[in-house]
Each structure stands twice: as C-alpha cells, then as structure tokens.
Length: 530
Image (cartoon, rainbow, N blue to C red; front, side, top):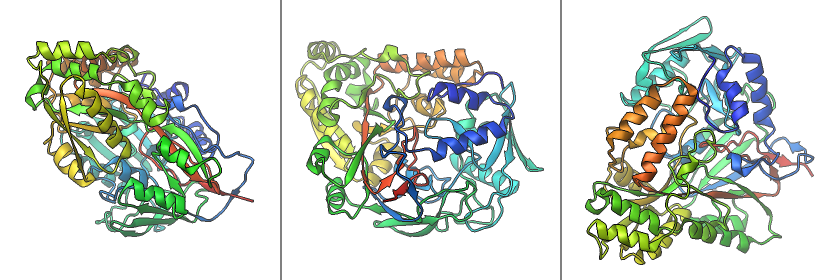
C-alpha cells in the first residue's frame, strides 16, 4: 500500500510499518529489536519511555515481580469490552496478528508478515511458522478466523469490524476483504487470537502471549507464569508476575513503602517526596497517554448550551492543575487527542481556552446563568489523579458561581452508570485509545454507542464520516484535525492534560517500558544481576 494514515507516534518508523507491503522479514526484525530493547530511556514527548536502569546491568533470568493495581479486572475474556486497567494485564496473555510496540508501530505477532492493498480493501496476513498457544497446541488459521469473527460479533454493528465482508483462512494466510476502504484497520488487528476449542476464555485464558494464566482471585489478584511456548526467543525474563489488587491508593502506597509490591504507577509528587531519594525505588517518568478531561453531559440542561461549556473551559486553570499534581510534567492539551499522535494532533486547539474568569462569567451571563448553577462531578475513587483534579476544579468553578458537588463512586459503578448508562452531569476521567485515530474521535458522533456525553453536531458528524472514509493520508489527517477543532470550539468537553505517569519500580528490576496504548509489558522487565 503506497499511502496509509500514520498514527503519529514515531512517525518515520510507523510510516514504514503501515506502508510496507509484504515486508515481513524487515518488520519481524524490527519487532525483535523494539520489544527486547526496553531499557533505554526515550523522550516522554513521544509518549513512551523505559526504565532508567542502565543497559550495562545484565538481565538475570527468572524471578518474580508484584505489580500493584487499585482495580480488579473487568473480564479475562479478551473479546469483551473492558477498561484500560484490564487491558494492561491481558496484554501479557494474548496477542493479535499484530501488536503495538513501545514506539507506536504495529509489529508482527501471531502473523509474521502482512500486506495491505492499495485501495485499503484487502488485508493479507501470513501466520507465523510454528507458533503455539500457551497450552502447547499449534495456532491455526482457523483459530485466527474464529477469533476475529467472535470479536466482531461481540463488538456489534457499530464497530469497524462490521465493514469486513469476508475472512478467509487457508494455506497459512488470513485474508480480510472489506466492504469499504479502511486505511485504519491495521491498528485494530491486535485482537487476541484464542483457540477455537476454548469456549470459556474468561475462566480459562489461553493465548500466545509471553505469560500464561496461573490463577485469579477476584478482589485479590491474578498470577501469571512464564509461557515456555512463547514464539519470541529469550522472552520473557521473569518466571512469575503477580498483579495485586488493593482497595485504594493509600493502601497501595503503604504496600509500596512496606516492600510488598514492586511497582506502583500513577504516583503523585507528594508520594515521591515521601519515598525520598534513598528509597529502594527508581521513579520512571512517562506519559499516561490519556485525554484527561472534565466530560460534560449535554443532556443536563445548562450544559446543553455551548456558551456554558465554553465558560467552564475558560474557568479551568490547566497549568495550575498540572503544576499542583505533577510538578508541571504533564502535557496540557486542548483537544481529544494525545500529543503522542503527533501527525494528527491539532496544535491549533491548544490555548483556545486560557484561564479567564471574567470571560467565563460573560459567557454564563449570555447563556442565562449569571448567578451560576449546580453541578455534580462524578469521579471514580480508584484514580487519585482524577479525584485531585476534580477537587481543584471545584475550587476554580466557585470563582464563577458554579456550585460543584463531588460524587466519588466505585469503579464498577462509574462504568455501569456513568459510562454505559450516561447518567451523570459531569465527570473527570481519562480516555485512552488505539493507534487508529477513529478510536479517539468516533465517540462524539451523534449515533455512536459510546457517545456517553450525548454530544450532537451535524458538522462534526459529516466531517468525521469523510475522514473515516478517506484513504488519502493528507486528506484524512486534515479532516481529523478539523474534527478536533470543532470539538474544541464547541467545547464538547473540557480537555485538560495528558497526565504524567510517574512509576515507582523496585531497584532490583529494570526494563520497565511505557506504551502509547494500554499495556503493561512484563516480558521486557528483568531482574538486575548483582
């Protein structure tokens, strides 16, 4: 394929990945190099970095790591619609035909090679020779076909998979024929490949990932062990990974101080200061690759008016939030896109709403809310950065007469009632996405099932539809940038920052790596030999 849309992460490398037709050997070599060299620090601005431990510290095979998490898993079935935390974990159990690298490339995994037709209507994948599932059984093209069809059925008619007219599997190849051109399908081909014979993957996870399932206790944790059948030689380094579930951030931090967990992410500046420079932990700096924002429900009468939403956008001091919570290490943003998607991120959206209390008051008065209004902000209590952000917003909104009530809820409650039910006025949360641009922007189209903010704008719908249908890279990029500008100008929600991800890693481990999508890749983590 001569032209395809870049995800914008490590643009030069990704261009080669998406445009390479039949470039299997080159792509596969790149996968080896990218996945195994995860200890060299990279620019945070590119949306990924790795542990700062020196490469001169040789990996010591074996060992066990304990990773702290403040939420349980939604489901071990990889084809269910789950949250980012769950996807972080199952990244280690399952792989798709391709998978994301730490630099944003889609690299071969279950497939050793792929080819995309010039019209972006035919995708051909070659099954990797000798690849096996974690139970030792060979992966077949029938397993791949089954997995893709099962995922498509679970996602429903609104997903990109509804555009697939046919999936054929024979002679070691899987061919996807699309009804309409789609230049963004490759990043979606990380769908987990599972055995067709396994009818209950939620209870018996079997995949091709670097680790295999050992045990799971709801509310307590999940244990993974080395997959001896993993296709990539030399990985993983560790024998065991335990993801330990804790009820809240305070408990997690106490466990870190006590040494009962080895890794804690989403650290605050105060926690890092409390640990001190002489602790047993390195602090690794990266990005959460999230669009953290105050998401506004247009079904709530005051928020149905663009002037009110714009007023709230002016009332928020994004720089103050960044400085207070992350010592200025986050990236302040003005659109529903992460800066790591550099070729797509519309910089014209940055700075549209500066902190301007008087302007906010003028807009409220013009909308008929001169005396303000009441606003309930729902926030999941398992994410301290969102709780703290909501608390600061409450204080800032008081300056313009908006009376905020904070409503902290359990994560399961937030998923069920706020996100899936759409029953809220405003919420502070961070959205992630795939390396396909549509996954960031489709949720604002009027009839999308994930449009939980009830936003509707005919110009946006038309612009998005043109962008999704285009196979011309330049045209698609400009249309997606226009989509972002519409969302910003209309204040569909208040976009705040891509938060810094400060991770504490026990000094006996190295190789911790950030990804521009949901992934805690434990295959590249290793013990440091003494």
